[in-house]
Image 1 (cartoon, rainbow, N blue to C red):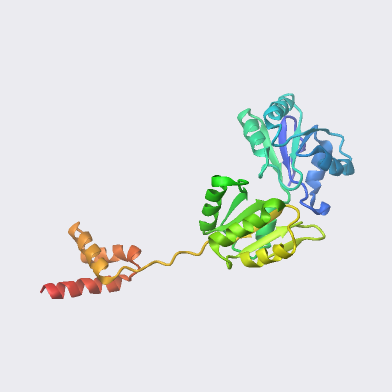
Image 2: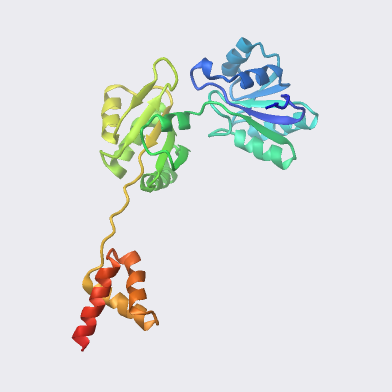
Length: 288
């Protein structure tokens, strides 16, 4: 299939870069970073090593959370002038837990095309190698550093029944593990990863207590990606006979047929339709 020529004038490109292993940079990403007019980097010094190794002659500028307000108008002006602009983060896909999302929103609002050049992502890499359910999952990113907001967010996370992926800094790692132990217990499924795709890749689990024990003995270093198993579904408490009779009577009083009332109540009572229908018959016999 014939592919479009890249880069195109006035287009914003989000380019995925390696999260550790340089061999994970795709040929398409490599070609674009060499040919694009300007590259906005989370850290020009860090990304400069990669770009220099590629032989990229593109103009470079810093783009991070501390200069977003001033830099976005400049980058939009580059696009309006017909220049192609690439955005890269220190590692992985830009726009996830970084200001790339603000630039994308502004570019689209201004009418510019936005194209993603796919690449590695720590969140999905950790998720698929964790052994935890990945058909449905949540991405939480970095939690607030402290205070009520952190507690509220974490409380919501541990109640989530889907697998959740979080990021955490090394100096808050032990605090997070202790919070998880407090809120969801020792045996909640957890896989903690760092240095993904690198020579010293580390994956620690499979439970909260296992990770906590490990990092008490080996202090955390580097940023972490955590994959937390979903909260167990709460077992439904079945209604007793008296409660069922009361609910059935109310439904029948509203005009439902006995068989329909039994079928409807079975959905929420934790009892089978046959059991409920039998209760109705008993009630009728006693009335006779």
